[in-house]
Image (cartoon, rainbow, N blue to C red):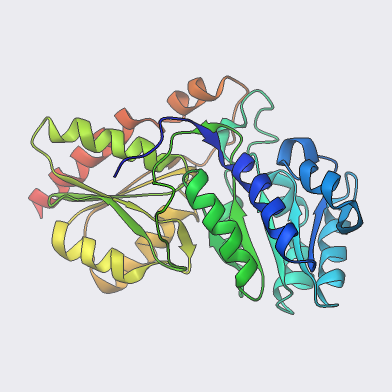
Length: 318
């Protein structure tokens, strides 16, 4: 795999992909809640003003209005920060979008602690849990620009509600431009036989870095990008559990209700193996530089490495 060295924020890839969709399909409508320059929907608004609705700081209204527009046969993409899309507007997402299975795609940016200086009030570490629990809702967490472009286009193809989790920071490329994805399936991005690291979002790159360091100590770590958190790729998880015997999960999200919880919920009933979860430990975020916050909340390659060593030790003691 030969990937680009350039870093691109997933929200930037989202904005560009929206333009592509808008050019080929006149039924695409985009809505925003006064954050279009940050969520990167501004370019769509400029090119297709007749298909863009600026709702202002009114996220609950935006979700309900999106459901109404979708009921006319349109495919609606709604964007704001993740904390507002999934928290403030949760009841509208549940009852107006998911319950009647409206064709609304919630593409929320600025997820996780890497929002940075805005602090805990704006750092959504609960959004995967909030969306994953809603029936009919699908949840995709892309790891780079390439997987984001696929996720947005795939969300457009899927009939019904989809939540796509996007970030603020520019992130390294994980995939080549021509990488192929399949809805509901994870991607194995590194092979290994001793343990499997299951990651999503920007933690995939961190997991790959951890695997490189682990190899220097004789630990062979498989790395899986679980970009589809719901539906979960249970077949991939079962193979990993059987073949490597230990799992580490890594997410820029609370360890409660997110990727780690989803993995544990499945494996406890199919192939129980040691699982160590790397994520935010039941606390709100803090104001600070993104890189400093990743260190503070133990979301670095070093933390994944330590968790992986712990998982391998637990396996050996069974």
